[in-house]
Image: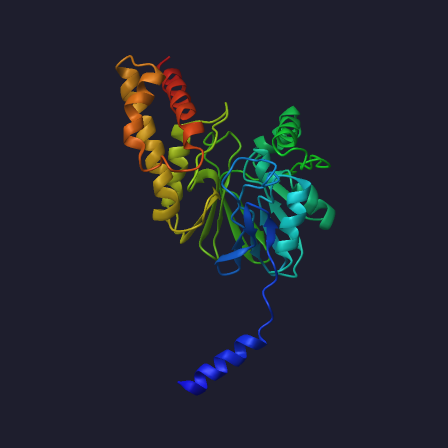
Length: 319
């Protein structure tokens, strides 16, 4: 054993030192981590965009192919995008040849600008509805929100929308790798796509799944549609699931907890609505059953809003 230990000690000393990660003081260190063969994810902070995290909060991901890298959800601002690219270069020297934006919320795609600066020929893909909205005033609203929330860290960010549409059932082939599109809309928004990377058995869920935090449903969302999207995700032959926020992992770790939350929410709201209860009354009854999720980041902010959103959805179904 002693010769082996000496060999391992020498080998360790000869290994190049790990490059320092992107550090956000008081927030954490962020680098791309391998989650499957040829697949890396930078798991972002769980807090809402603020001055400390510079607006960074999502999970940028890269897939390495023979043609180059596919970058999924590059981040929220020009500054964030440049930092994501700096970390990307530490794990691969291949160029980014394609960017896939999973939905319209700006924390996931406004860093397209940084990618376009570094690799002007990289193609940018998204759901057709997202392309349309990214070219509208909705994108400018996201820029204004991020500038306000981050104390100006988003300044200099310009809107660089995706241009290539991806629809449900499409298959994108890049460098011999296959990216299958699942678009069950509306779900988290009316622009969502999930990306199944066939070769690694990885499914990028976008914000159809959260882990360890809750987030906002906007006016285009359909919570029942989000449930159906996650049920569809569970039927794929996938080993690794990457949420829009929170750590990647198995179906039991990533998909099922959020699916359970949404199903419990919708069941309680449907029952309460049938009994002529208002949303605040349903919230009071449901809150004691939510201990499993009560420690998730954003629970106090978003739980009541989710009950209201679900109530409005059920009311619309009843009309």
